[in-house]
Image 1 (tube, rainbow, N blue to C red):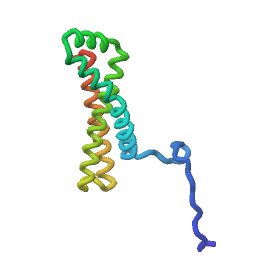
Image 2 (image 1 turned 30 degrees about the horizontal axis):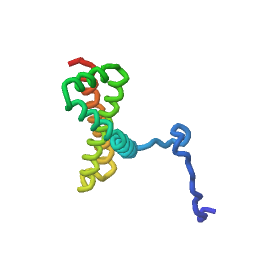
Image 3 (image 1 turned 45 degrees about the vertical axis):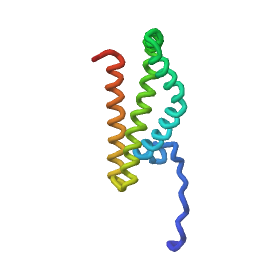
Image 4 (image 1 turned 90 degrees about the vertical axis):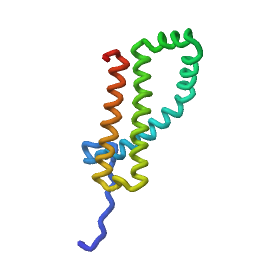
Length: 134
């Protein structure tokens, strides 16, 4: 009986508490990199239109400043900002991995943690500026 091959175990990776699996931070950063890239791609025409309108005349600039004053618009701007910052930081991480920097397990975990920390810290700084703290 000891020579019998082991049976494969199929675990439900969506249930973290029962199966004991957690998504590694490197995988989370990779997934968020794809999501933020898609988000930026879809919003690019809208953002470019707003940039064009803000540079057109002083009247359109003041109209856009009045448009972005509500809290929910600032929240959307903050989501776009996080998306850009995360995508940029994760892109730099992927470029470094392309030249074989940090491709081992510990290096990958550390760089993924760094990407999350830097992107969230920079987003927090932008949020403070957006809310008028400084």
